[in-house]
Image (cartoon, rainbow, N blue to C red; front, top):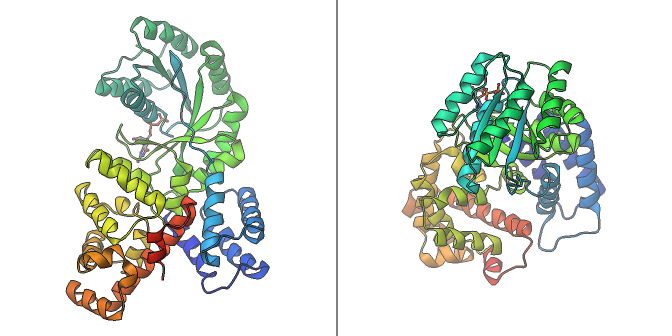
Length: 443
Ligand code: GDP
């Protein structure tokens, strides 16, 4: 997901390298590339136009960011605008209501049933909810069976729907049964069709009227791009949805749905499905996704993933360092080692800021595991002092490090260069002042 967009945007930003300042001309040229990158990612063309206009206005506007060169400034502006485009603040589900009633809607095959199971698990695990699952798709017997099987897997009660029942009656009666069983979270898995269908919409409206769910979550398959956005619009018009669950984000969707849905419908993506397993559901964090798109990693998600593996205090300290941009080679290496414990997957690697670029420069063919070993070898050949104060690393030290780690001096240079760049951008993102240490990093 987002890989080709990430590449294209990277190329667009290259245009700003070596420029002294942002001007009408170079911004226009660079943004032409950004525009193409977004269109190629299947972002709605109106959304693209608005996005590019906004970036242009801000890039040429009065805010000049100290300490950033033009290419970094443009990355910062694009990042901020991407966060907005993705929905700004992270939007979850207000879990206070008892019972909390969630109505899942969407086309057939979008991932409604799977997401119902995932949300039951997520809200039980993270918010102590007691879920009750309601199969309300009586048109396909397989749909009832599927949710019933998921309920069994999760050890959660399920309403005994049959195909001769009326979906509105099922949902109403399910509320009574859920209460009897002491459940405070009711998930209605409604019917889907292959296309939008008036009769179905009327049925969904009736369920909404009779059961007053606090949330109507539209489930969309990210792989369907702009189609997902069009369907979301139709569902929203009729049902006034409260948010979106974007599924199959683990696939190779280009990102158009994630990037357009908020602008077009006014409703935020709240959760994303990142795999077929019931545990593979995540909250949607616009800022983290923007960082991922810009190839700056997603340390927060990584830290959360790591928290189950490593000491919590350690993880917290790591996050604080990131925020203050006091992040040096020693931290970088210790991160890499921890990530190994999580199993070295390419996806995880890309969450380390700068790692995406480093991997790219070291060659496309090599395995991520090998890259990681090589990067670790280079950092391990540095002295502790060098790791803590990378600006000490002069030519003769670089030669020594290269020899020690069995790589070329150019590889050492590439690592340092990427690391410095990533530090600068990261600091700009975090918006903090320069710490003493950070000054030392930039030479
Ligand atoms: P429904 O018809 O809307 O209820 O869709 P289902 O829940 O039956 O999902 C359709 C297919 O998509 C199933 O094979 C699911 O396993 C798969 N699926 C759902 N969510 C995800 C996801 O986040 N990632 C992946 N890779 N597959 C998913």
